[in-house]
Image (cartoon, rainbow, N blue to C red; front, top):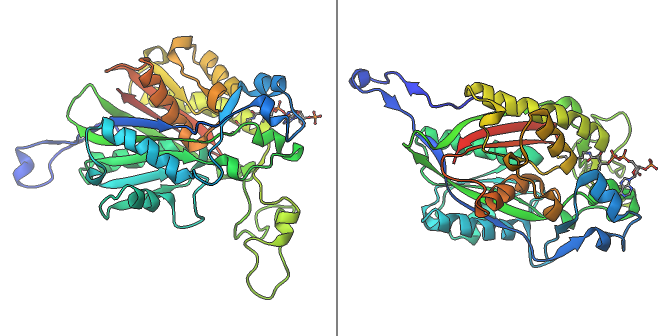
Length: 370
Ligand SMILES: CC(C)(COP(=O)(O)OP(=O)(O)OC[C@H]1O[C@@H](n2cnc3c(N)ncnc32)[C@H](O)[C@@H]1OP(=O)(O)O)[C@@H](O)C(=O)NCCC(=O)NCCS
């Protein structure tokens, strides 16, 4: 989807004389929160057969943060990041007029986390939308917010990416290909309209290929009843009615954990990342050398390095922090964006490219002027 500034020609008789320009969407405030509990690769050796060398060599991860088991949730972390973003935007929680919350690890199966943020931050009875697009969830959420700002529907949108992965991974050797990769944390942005022609979101680009839906997936709980997979990924009780969503058999057979064919994800990601970044640049008549900072979703340092090489980007044009936080899925882009900005690596007027790839498969990019 392309969302460049559009000149709406004439919408009424009166406007024959008044061409109407849509505003652009700017990032008015940004915040992040990571739990204080640092879990190093060495710490994971207590639970599984792995090594610091293996994890660092394959992923670039040295440590990650894990939320407090009972005091922190996906929503509480989101609230901490949102407080900072809202304060930096110079507004109050009651000024927010829409919430978009991207996560794959919600507090409840339903309702979504957006309403929990609305309650926790004592916001008005505004709309709250949850986005389920995993690693590209934040760019999808940003794109939705961009449309609402440009059309004039809302003036202050809170866009959140937050994950508490540590609650549901398989930390035995059986699950080590996945559990060593993921970490917890949250990032949030406040979107507002701007008339400044040198600022704001230039375009967003969203894609999917459901042909690979089962390559990186958590099947259960779910309603699929093995419909989409040749082999059984869910064992359920043979009751006359109900009892298929989550069963004792699923838990006994460890079918309640995420599944990933890592090499297939890797091969597809290194193609789709450069493709969707180039799509955003081409749509705006720009080239890789114009990028001030690329914030790739922090899936794996090797993927980010491959993308950097392919696009011939200098080290200072790409920001990575997977070594400290692991892959925080929907939170990885806002956390990296916030950290890069706090470190002074993003300045006013810089061209920033956000790009993501993940489960679905879905992939997406956004190009903006800071
Ligand atoms: C997950 C990933 C790091 C695994 O690396 P890989 O080189 O592809 O490794 P493989 O899965 O082929 O496994 C290679 C070996 O390492 C072992 N291994 C897997 N995880 C391990 C771990 N944490 N520690 C030690 N050994 C491990 C495997 O059992 C396998 O052993 P074997 O050869 O004896 O069977 C890599 O595939 C990857 O990063 N893929 C992309 C994943 C991703 O980005 N996911 C998020 C999507 S946004």
